[in-house]
Length: 247
Image 1 (cartoon, rainbow, N blue to C red):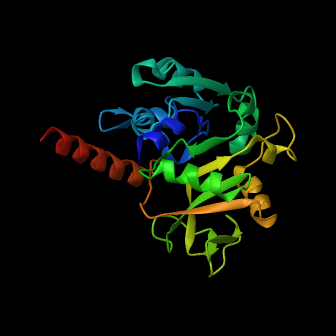
Image 2: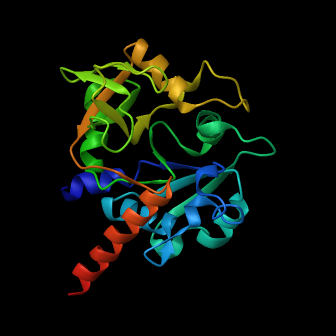
């Protein structure tokens, strides 16, 4: 990534969806939100934020719900990590990934990145944003050729385009997966009501059907802490990374 690209990312906010209940990780998440689970001796969210900072991002909006106050108390305004962090709370009703993001739109500007709060994705973020700009479309999804290896494939990606996206009804043509990084503009949320729960997957399906979703294929796999196995795998990866940096 060149210096010019890194500077341009400083103006692109990143929304992190960190409001879920994380029921698969209970009892570990009964009293602590998933984003704060310990990975390589630090809260997972700190690793995620540090990665974003190293890519050139400077503004983050944390979309929080379950135990969100604990996240804000732990992470704060982001200054110690070289970031400006704001918070968007779901309120009394959990809004789902889509509803939470729509609620946060006033903080996000004319275009923004979206990532999930349980994923660690060492990708070329500058190239992703550039692909979005070049596409001329209001949204972009990153995809990875998955072949069912790390999770169920849910994208039919062919000839540089997303032909179909569906998390529920999967077909043999689906060899790719939604990698977990998207670039969106506020207008794509126009058809969804305020403060009503909905899944981001519903928005993505509509955008793909309307041919309004660009795509960028990533080659580096993602890591996730949504399961005990994923948590242990990422813990090992980041511990080894610390060792290699210190030697």
